[in-house]
Length: 467
Image (cartoon, rainbow, N blue to C red; front, side, top):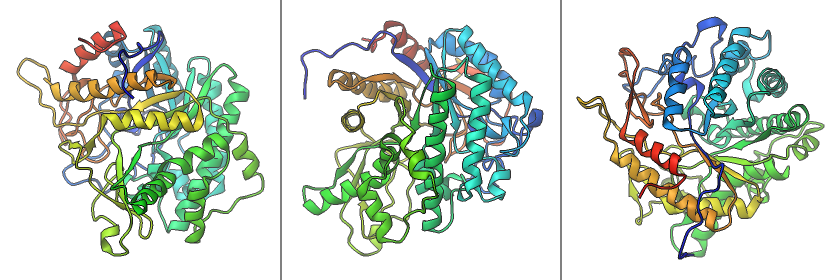
């Protein structure tokens, strides 16, 4: 649908930006912090150094928040490191860890920035992993206890909460992401079920203990196109969307498994076991909004029943395929970035519409952005016109979605500041702020404003795309 005029962004729109703890904080073992599954990793993509140094945000958070305020952010989405708060995941609470997050949230609020906190962004405490991780029912109880500790300590400062970042990617690509959600396929889907139960219990806990706060899930969601109008391709695309998107959100919002996704699990003998009380717990979750991460759409085709069903290489934005269900297909109508991810701003609008039509809950974008090999020039800047172009195209589609009738709370692109990328280390940069460190030489972590910093600053001040 085209319009003669688009509706403006609403007053109070949460123009923000996002990061995660393990990719920014550094100080991985400072002040009583325990190791997470990310800290315990020993294998990293070739040529990358790992995450332990981050970009030194733990020690420089006041400097960073001042830059965020200069940028004009209305919101900042960050994650809380579970093992910084409870080093072994379920034992004694670390006061220094809670103090850090309280000081961060206080500093944000002092600068007029709304804190949005994610309870877990990939980094399960390693001690819990060694006791079974999400395969163990005890981790469900540990997550609920951890959430309660954090709600009690920070609930007066943080009005928006996210449960688990990209649970769907942790389940589908756990080995690649290093999140510990691995094992046989049945085992992985049982881990997924435990995470869904834990999420529902935590949302119910938030509603009891923080009645003024809002909480919701934060999956990676992408619309899925059929490769052709062939009805078999249409079915394959719908199957992939059910497995990738609706399995997680139907449980989070409606309290029941998506029937197509459940049929997929049942046909393979992978359906998870329900413990007594699980069904009741799932029914009580009731999120207040849906947060979601979007980078690109996907295209799926009918399986051929041969080795082309599964691609040799892929990630959360390049479809691997599922034997007998769907295979990934390229979209000839889309451009690609230098990491071979397709770029689809209009798919962003489509994803908004699908989510809102299906669930009728307010939507909050918690990741969207362009990774690139940014270069710091002699003038101390990064001239990232390519990032500005990417963000402008996607933000325009948010405005289309709002005009379509979608309730959008805000936009928090990835990322507020450069951080260590999941797949390509510090070389792949997303931030509005450049951090001067290399892969194996952390240098002085000096911060530099990119051209996109000043562009986004003007956008936020005007509550509209710059002319």
